Image (cartoon, rainbow, N blue to C red; front, side):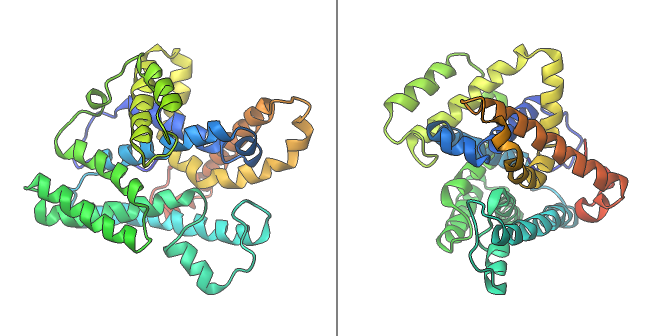
Length: 318
């Protein structure tokens, strides 16, 4: 979703882009209220792993060796689009009958949603900024003592969780990625690609109590097995499918930012597709509509030269 460019040029890990593609598309699908309500078990299953997967990847890609000026620019160009889109989402939630509808929007409530308890998918960016800042600050004092650094980061994030600024389990998943980077563990070797991970997913989801919750042991196993299975699947993708998937994964931030407006707009044509009883036709059309719409917005921002003021660069489609 959001990635930190490394201090030194490194080869892009294509498998991570594929994972981000899968996770962001699943996020969009189950932000469609009709699909989420019609398939609650599938939604619970996807919610068990898709955002934990993003957080692990984000922690893994965070480079704490950056100079302070570079790191602050990185945070700045997460905060600016977050500020704009979260503000718009809060206002939209006060006007439209969405799931997170706000009955009466006050200035105090607006600030609360903006800085403390964000609505919609933008909580991820809020969590990413806080976890990233804490990790970076701690690393400046304890980077030579890896165990102490991780313990200090976890303790600091636990305090933020007590204050209600982050969700503790989300911070833990982020720290898993940080630990992999800190101990120089290759991501793909850690989540060993294996076809039998699919069997693990089925067994855990059906046999382990409360497995469809990200904070349980079962939920953590599902996160591991899903990533492992997807890494196994990636080399078998047809070239055309892989090319599209990698493009979507590279640009997952665009979809995170702009997809909510299109998932809401998809309700306008939902009734016209209900002749197909499973809802799969609506899901596919709405997903395509949302992806194309989000990239169209990004393209327009580029052409109007607005992107540099929102993202800090003139070209945002990678």
